[in-house]
Amino acid sequence: MKKLFAISLCLALVLGTLSGCADVTVGQAGTPSENSGAAVAAGETVKGTVTLSDSGSSSTAGGVAIDGSTVTIRQPGEYTVTGTLSNGQLVVNTGENPGDVVVMLDNADITNLTDAAIYIPQAKKVDIRTAEGSSNRLCSGTEDMLSHYVDTNSGAVIYAEDDLDIGGSGSLEILGYINNGITCKDDLDLEGGVISVIAANNGIRGSESVELKGADITVTSGNDGIKSTSAVKEGKGFVTLESGSVSVIAGGDGIQAETVLTVNGGAVSVQTTGNHETASCKGLKGNTDVVINGGTVSVSADDHALHSAAGLTVNGGTLNLVSASRRGLDATGALTVNGGEITLRSGDDGLSSDTAVTVAGGTLSIRSGSKGIKVGKNTTGFGSTTGDLRISGGDVRISAKKDALSSGAALSITGGSLFALGQSSSFRGFDAPAQPYLSVSISGGAGSSVTVSQGSETLGSMDSAYGYNTLVFSSGALTSGTSYRVANSTGSVQATA
Image (cartoon, rainbow, N blue to C red; front, top):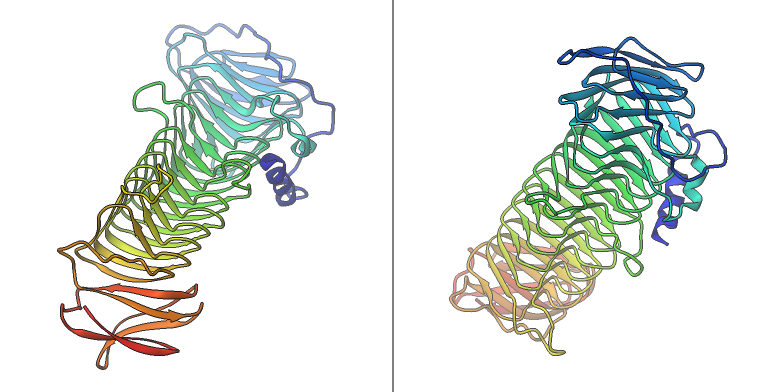
């Protein structure tokens, strides 16, 4: 169902704005014909222009075979491709010949009604580039296929069995009406230019890795937006964003790594349109670790905003995260915040880990429909007795519909600042030795403001998103044994740190 829902969204976003393919009956994806190209001397560098045309394509370069509407590059070299095929295919197949192939798209427009527009069965490495100022378009299938996509469809607009780089300084529009937008069975790098992808299934799929470096990428997909799928080789299965801009609207997971998902810089915007009760539709997901070192990350999802099946670490960056129904930051392993600026709104717990949550730096603003920070896993049917919550730095502000802080084992604060409001009567206090803190019973409604002060000095203030009956406040400005005033619109109480 998530695919049909997102496909409808795709149609709403793109119908009438993007040129479609011809309206014909589409069959199963076929196999491109094998052709013998012109002879090229061993070691010769091939350069030339391939001009595509429905009336007969041509090439100034040796090593290119033309068989009707199928154009095959058979030698390493540099090829500029221009012109239009309304139902054809560009094939790159160099066999065992050493060397790289550079395909420079210069106002190229290739449609294949039943298969890949660019098919790369064998080549050491292929670079697809867009020429400066050029507008290029690759299409697989027909636009009406989006509304009745089925899982038995296979293929992609660009399909590569070997390493693939895509970049340049022009624009590239990819319309994957049959199945995926880009599929690479090895390592996939997106390195520049403006790349837009619409796909009935996955938008961008690099089996062994995906690296995003400086490209301006938009993806609208019926299933996962950007993903890697294979961890068979050691060190593979990762997705890394180094720089550039990535915007994803996906019916499945927004960006998913088979192993480690890393954001070092750039801007990431993810919206998932699926329902978590029927399928996974997380914002950013790593099947081992998720690491955010920098950049800007914005997520709107029904499912977890950020999810890791192992560890989740935020070292920097600006994160604006919304999970309508589930958790904001969710990890099976340790969840660590060392820096960055995190604004989080979640329908369930804000930060959650089965094992440990550590806040050592950064700023966190958490509004959660359940618990603010929750550590531990219920494995016995009773309350959790495992899971450590430790705050040693940073600035943490929590408004929770239930407990602001929940930990099965250690609960400590040794530094930083904390302002937490929630519905709880069971806060047990922080483990000693602890930074001075206040634990106060004070009730208020959603939208009310709570202030902590000493004399005329305000030490902290926060508006609550939910009704509350408990305040927990800690700061380096507090002194043990000193009394402080906690006040809201209904009154005030005195509390001693």
